[in-house]
Image 1 (tube, rainbow, N blue to C red):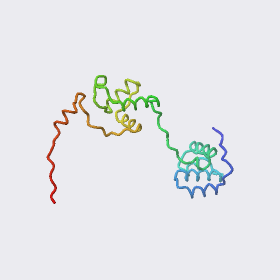
Image 2: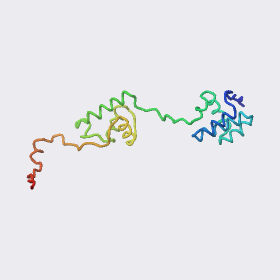
Image 3: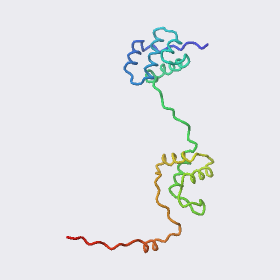
Image 4: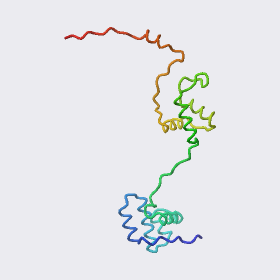
Length: 173
């Protein structure tokens, strides 16, 4: 059975209860109340039940409290999983998206997420879901809105001759 972890001595039980009353974070408040019960000499198991936790969890919070004080009892946001593409690979992907696809090489006239998913798998050997490819593009600053694709052999002069030209109406005075 592990030895009891001593609680730092710069806070009394009354100080911990006052901090609990002032706190806007419910989880921090219940942890402070459990620590106040420990400071009063209550059994650690009973003090843990006051805060709605088990004895081992209370021990973990005592370690955090001893190291960081009352602010250490606030929940932290999990950083999440590490990105599978490095910063250099993300820069290269950004350049690929900005340059656009090569019709002969890539077989498409504009990038779709499913096409970029294939490119990421071929170039970096990383397999992402199509929706996550969209998240990566968003993180890189790209928008899902795209211009209307043009045929690679489209002639601008031919387009100009076929545009509708309606006569202008005269304004009445």
